[in-house]
Amino acid sequence: MDFKDGLIYLDDGSQGTSGLMGPRTRSLMHDGVVRESKLLWVLGNYSRFVRPGMVRIECEAEPKQSVQNGVLASAYRQPDGGIVVVLVNLSKQEVRCRLGSSEMVYVYTTSAASNLEKMRQSSSEISVPPRAVSTCIIAHRP
Image 1 (cartoon, helix red, strand yellow):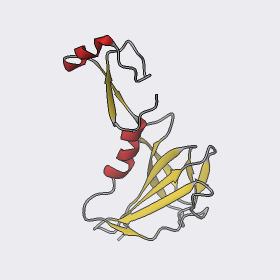
Image 2 (tube, rainbow, N blue to C red):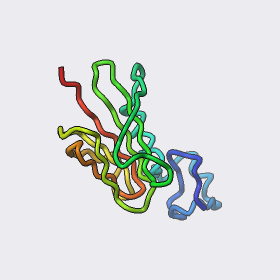
Image 3 (cartoon, rainbow, N blue to C red):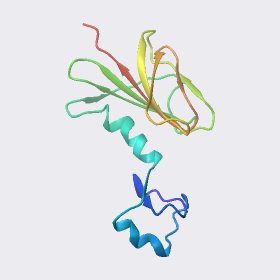
């Protein structure tokens, strides 16, 4: 089974990640194995960086975003003028996106292999792994 209803899962450790409930599940009231889902980490790509007081702004990333090519993007302006860009790659191939400048930015990526992994990349070409979400932090320059 593949449930999409939780951010964390608790099991007795005997069923692996199958989601099956066995007779020992009553013991979960007192003990168990906690497993986080990728959905929890993807939520972090938004909730950790898109904060109250920020305003959504127009985002023009290259390649042009669309469901057809598997690239979705949204951008938010911080009160101090900094910008947060969230890139979603729905495709099964790595995508390289251009954000329109050449400065170095911090990128936090959640993919099959990483959970909000922090890297520095040039905003002239952000690499987004297959089926991943990357959040780019562009600091305000006064």
